[in-house]
Structures are given as structure tokens and as C-alpha cells.
Image 1: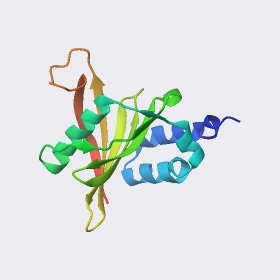
Image 2: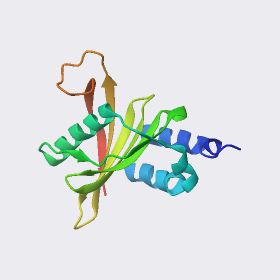
Image 3: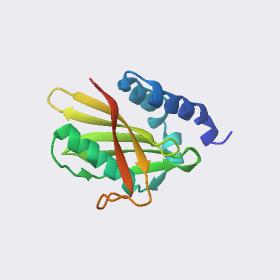
Length: 152
């Protein structure tokens, strides 16, 4: 059994949860419980960059914090067989994480919004890729408003 085959079902469940979940905390708990804390899963990913995903993340952060903020230290890993990106970053000095399935253009961002109370915000989003986006430095992305969010 290949290392990837051990996680095939988990990735499919995660993708379904990402699309259908009402409580987004459940999505992140599933990801950490079934994949992210397993060294075999971490080894599967290949370090990757995705300027469009970074741009979408910055646009979401701008809405969340009501001002322009930079996403720093975005450390994405990609599992190409599933068009799946995941990784941590810092947004306005706060820990954050992103999950994104490129094949369906749906992802989720989690942000430790208030470190003093551990309030975490989870935002599900989608994006649309275009060839001729007029947004300067957008990486050819049209950002679609977050579908909804969960606050814990």
C-alpha cells in the first residue's frame, strides 16, 4: 500500500466536508485528526507556491481585519494527485492555516482572530481563475466572497 493510498479516503471525506459542512471547526478537526498530525501524510506533500491562493488569502484577511494586511510565511504543501494545498501562515502576526482543493476552487482559511481569548475564525471561500484579470498583481484571480464563516 502506497503512502498516498492510506489517505485517499480521508482526502475525499475532507473535500466533501469542505463543501458541505455547517460548522467549519469540524473540517479543521478532521484534517488534523486524520492527516496533518501524521508524519506519513506530511511527507506526501511537496513544498509549493501558489500566488493566486496567497492573493485570495490576502483579500479574505482584508475583509476580516477591515484593512489591508500581508500574509507572511505561507508554507504551502501540495499533493498533486488531489490538487490539494495545505499550510500555515501568519496574518497580522496571528497564526492561520489554509486548505484548498484546486480542482474545485474551494478552500478554507482559519485565523486565530483574538489570541487573548483563542477566538478562531473559519472562512470557506471559492475563487475563479481568469486569463485576463484586470486586478493589478492579482495572479489572475477573481475573488468570490466567502461563502460563510464560523466563529469559535
